Amino acid sequence: MSDYTLSASAISRLVRSGDVKAVDSVSSAFTRIEQVEPRVDAFLHLDRAGAMAAAEAVDRMVASGADPGPLAGVPVAVKDNIATPDLPTSCASRILKNYVPPYSAAVVERLRSAGAVIVGKTNMDEFAMGSSCENSAFKPTRNPHDLSRIPGGSSGGSAAAVASAMVPVSLGSDTGGSIRQPAALTGTVGFKPTYGRVSRYGLIAFGSSLDQIGPFSRTVEDCALLMKVISGRDPRDSTCSSTAVPDFLSFLNDGVRSLRIGLPAEYFIDGMQPEVEKSVRAAAEVFTSLGARTLDISLPHTRFAVAVYYVVATAEASSNLARYDGVHYGYRTPEAVGLVDLYQKTRRDGFGDEVKRRIMLGTFALSSGYSEAYYKKALQVRSLMKRDFDLAFQDVDVIIAPTTPTTAFRIGEKINDPLSMYLSDVFTISANLATIPAVSLPCGLDSSGLPIGIQIMAPPFREDLVLKAAASLERALGIAPLTADP
Ligand code: GLN
Image (cartoon, rainbow, N blue to C red; front, side):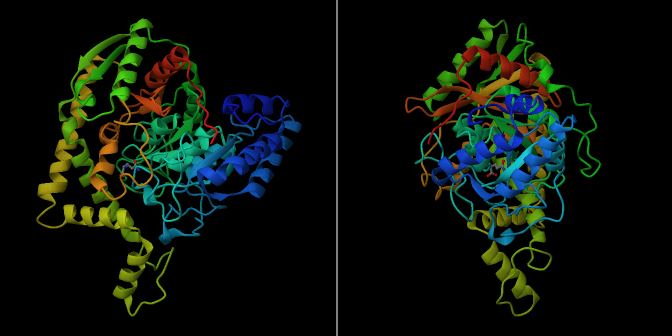
């Protein structure tokens, strides 16, 4: 088998029927990885031996008449902040370099018991803080559509691996846009589930009230398939919901007739790339032509999103990252004189600049005398933002918006300007603060041939609405799957 552009759904069908061997599916993925990875740099760790052994186990199941599961023999890449007990999980940080967790993330268990084969761990911004993959302590990842540009972040490696067809699907994490933003910039489908839909057990924490794991794929069908496998209750994550998980694949042909679609005024702003606005508005017209109704709506507190996020997320990060002390695990400075010196030098050398910036911001926002003015205020505005969505969803079923204000920018372009980097998430952050599900899928290309993403959001636990709208648009546009050949 050598068609590396096969979808996950197609691979698993072929493997389960015995027409294709899982070992061939996995070795074809490694052939593609050998061809393009040297230019893209999507991976931090590859595990050919482990992957081939897992594929052989799948083939043995098929041979014995057992069903290996809905992802039988599907090569999958996993972001490096998701715990794998047989592969390093570094969060692209020096402080966790070569760290191998003692346990599996819930999503990794679920992937493996569905027959998926993990080929490696993908590059990311350190501790998922960033929008370009340039904050990795080890290397930047490149956008397979244009190697001089960033793939987005923080899940840039997972996005680039799927965009260049090294794997059909991967997992990322999204705290403020880290799945949807890189999906938009690489022409892939990226889904941030409702907060609580997917277990965070084994996801290394950044902003615990915002973090969710979700899939990247090249088709909406594969997105629904992965969502079905990874969603559902897990007693090891107390915030993971026991809300029933519907068969996400069953909504893909429902169509959008009489669906009410909101276009929020606040998501079409001065300074955004005109081609992005044009593409998203054209997609809105496609929805109308399919029988949906579009309505202009307002989410009035949107303008506070970036400010609120950078207080809440950094406050949570400063607390979550206190555990990296050089004592429990991870990097320890060899030069310490005494305990305080050990903490200081370990953290000074172990963390990169952006992570330190976030820890300082968060510590300040939580410190005595300031927490009322910053942290508490941010939580209050977060509730107002959530209420904006609750009110809007009384009138519309889903909301559509651009995923990002621009297409992929150049490597180095924003790295010395944190504020302009933070602004690349203006359109994605609100869904995390409001805990709602949101997808990004390709809706066009700009004049340089770079992908443009459209975002579809729905009320909590209405992933079904997101997926049926996304599947209808994908069919009508006919541009997916986009595959880059770097
Ligand atoms: N880019 C945003 C940040 O830097 C979002 C990151 C994420 O979703 N993990 O925090």
